[in-house]
Image (cartoon, rainbow, N blue to C red):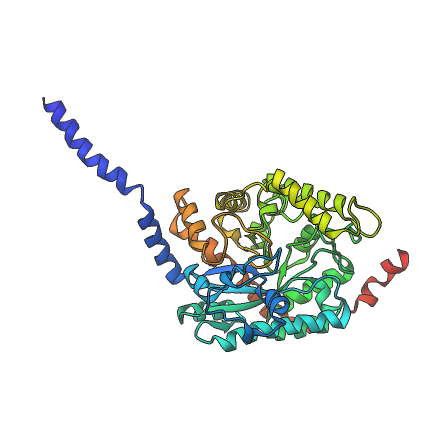
Length: 438
């Protein structure tokens, strides 16, 4: 009898404790709300400025960012916008690196001008919505702006071709507000190799190394998304400041050149850098990556200019055939949980201090289910809470890690500026012997 009473008492004590140790959905949301009061969600890469340039002819006044932009009409084959102020607020976003992207087909002064015009779009966004956006230049700016209830707007240049091989142009871009530059985009530059082009430089040329030094001296983060593994390693051997991957995922999960291999992830603790995990389905899901390749091959089979393709010169027939193929071979679903898997892998290999969020929103044609827009970050963070992440872990992922890396780059810059002047090197001087040899 006494044993039964004791067992019953123990049961009554243990059951409530078990429930208390397993928070429900409301508990997760409440925990997250407290975290995001102190630490903003900071996304490493959003392409809205390019969408404004293309869809709205760079006229910021014609796009009402205070409305639900997902409801705006889109052309056939287009996708709804993923970003607006209300959704940023619901997503807990307190800092955004806006990508000022220029296609690699733009070269020279044209690319420089287009970059400055993109920076102007971001400035106009801040001027038109001063209660919501404020331009930020430093990690301290981001914290101050977030504390004031606004969204810190930072600039990231998405391609080294946008400075026209000029260190003076790089410096002027920094003065205009750029706080990171992706060394390449989809094609090699004259001094660094792209992940999606045939390599030419075995990583970095002499000018490329000088450019990394100059970025360190300025306090501009070196962004290693879009570069080859050799370029990643060359930069990590050269840089004195933390690096970032503004929108890349884990190669061990999806064998795509845009993702980061484990040996590079393992180098990040020594460097202090951050991988900001990308949401693009083809970089997140191996099945979707294979489907993307099959889709591209099928599209080329039907209409591959200028001389090949079953329906060459017959775009309607080519489109109809491709639509039939997609109907018979639907794209695999990619989910929020798979993005969380990449985040956990980066954490496992590089450590909790070296992972962040880099959605690529409004630069990707489709997003994972559950991550359709900038309002969905809380759902991703709560998924990780369910997997056992602590409040401190979530804060690091959400924004603390990239703020630490940016502050680290600023500290390196202060030291280097005190001991060295701006580099006057040119690509012709540093890379001429190699160019003549080739």
